[in-house]
Amino acid sequence: MNIQIIIPAHNEEAFLAQTLKSLVVQTLQPKKIVIVNDGSKDDTQQIIDLFSEKYSFITSVASNAMSKHEPGSKVINAFYKGYEILDHSYDVICKFDADLIFPKNYLEKISELFQKDSKTGMAGGFCTIDKNGHWELENLTNKDHIRGALKAYRKNCFTEIGGLKNTMGWDTVDELLAQYHGWKVVTDQTLRVKHLKPTGATYTKAAKYKQGEAFYKMRYGWVLTQIAAIKLAQKKKSLSFYYNCMQGYIKAKKGKTPFIVTKEEGEFIRKLRWKKIKEKLF
Image (tube, rainbow, N blue to C red):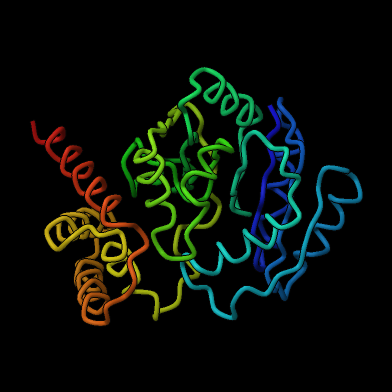
C-alpha cells in the first residue's frame, strides 16, 4: 500500500528527530514523507536536512502559514503547502504532527485496517502522554475518534470529504463528513503513539473561543454544543473552558460566521451525535 505522509513543523527541533526516527524504521515504509517547515526560527530545518540527505523518500518544503499558532487554520495551511508537492499516486494520505513517536508496526497495522474493509475511509491509533514516567492515554476524546495529530485517510475518502477544512474543528468534521459519505472511521486501541507535547500547549489566548465557534460552524445547534462543551470541560477539568466555548458559539452566531457544512450535512451530523449520546445513556 502506497502511504504518503505530510508533517507540518513549526519550531520542532526538540521533537522532530524522534518522530522521523520512528517513521524510517517502520515495518511498512512510507513511499514519501513531506515535512513542511512552517516558519521555524530554530534548528528544525537542519534536522530535516539531515534526514532528507540520508533517506530519499523524505523531502521538505518551506511555508509561513501564519505568524501566530492558531488552532486549525495554521496547521492546515501548512499541510496543503506539502500537499502541493505530494505524489498523488498515494493510496493513503497521512497528516502527522512533528512531536510523535510511532511504534515500529504503526503503518503496517494502519494498512491492514484499510485492506481489511474497503469502506474504511479513516484509520488511526491513540496518543499517549508522559505522566510521571508512565505513558497514559491522552483522554480528551472518545475511543472512536482519531486525534488530529495522527490522521490517515483513504484517497477516495479524502477526496469525497473535500480534503481538510481550514478551521478549528477540522479534525472532527472530517470524521463526520466521512460517515455522511458512507465511510467508516476505524481505530486500533493496540496502537499507542507517544505524544511528546501536550495538545494545545502553544495555542494563543485569542484562540479560547475557537472551539465554540467550531461547533457553530458544524451546525451542532445550541443544545448539542452545550453537551459537547460540558464534556470537554470535564475532561480538561476547566470551568472556564465551558464558558469560553459557549461564548465562542454565541459570538459566531451573532457574527453570522459561515458554516463549513451544508444544511443536509448538518442534519446528518446532529442525528449522528444524538444517536451516540443515546447509545451511551441506554
